[in-house]
Length: 420
Picture 1 (cartoon, rainbow, N blue to C red):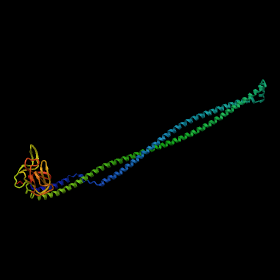
Picture 2: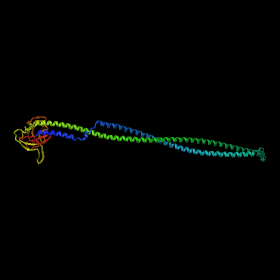
Picture 3: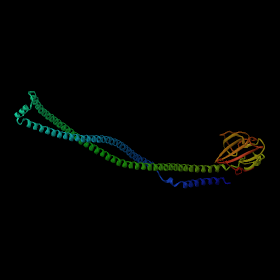
Picture 4: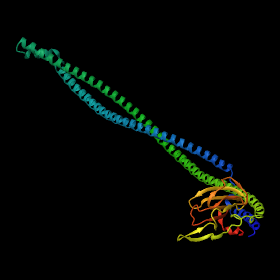
């Protein structure tokens, strides 16, 4: 195998991979979203949020005004109900007073009629008794049986006349009392009517005030509807802006991730280019003497007891990672090429084993050794002894288990060995 061509092929693969990676980037990665775009959304959201908050405050004031106004209307209803009751009572009182006045006036008319009749009777008697006072007294005297009877008859006539006079005066007093009572009733009726007029005026005023409150309620309801629509518009706009902002932030974050990925890929491409160039140089220097050394001491007899690949061992099929070189126990194990020891340990299967990194991603492993003569971090030269062939680990006889790894993956050692 031409190792220089392998290095060049890897360099070409790196370049081609970078081109394919660039072409495979999603088209949205080129849609530029800046911080100013997000700030613009945030400013608009702040403005819309302020308007929505203003609408909420106004709606709260409207609700409070409506509550106060309904309370006032309720108070007006109670006052109107009370005034209506007072008006009904006043009207009943006026109606009762009217009946009393009519009755009193009828009593006055009746009293006046009785007075007139009594006065007429008195006048008739006076006319009969006093038209001719002498005759009257003479008749009384002649009709009397004695002086006592005469005096008695004379007293009777005077008593009748006095009774008539007293009766007329009493009737006059009754008429005067009735007239005063009538005047009192008329005055009371006038007061009640004035009170009724005042109640009606107050009722009209409260009804007008209540009507104003109802009209104010309608105005508040209209304002409430307008501000509710304004709030709903601001809320919908705010929700829309939030969704758009969220989508923009997601796109922005995706854009940042894609930019970071492009930067990472560019850095990886650069690293791969540098690694490929370094590998090319290392391969060029390394493969100039790669076959000058053999992992066993010169002149020792050996045979290949197991190749790399699938095999059956103890009745179980497994994959053999390296190649087994059977030889005498104690045979010196030599470094395949110069490098740095990265592992020097004991393993349940490998036994005593050593791993050496040679550069360019190439590493070799030496297992089942009786001992280990190097430690981790030691720098070894090509052909330097690292141990002796032994029986440690999982083995059925003396042999060296030898592996070659490229970038951590095992490869067939025959690609690197030149058998003596």
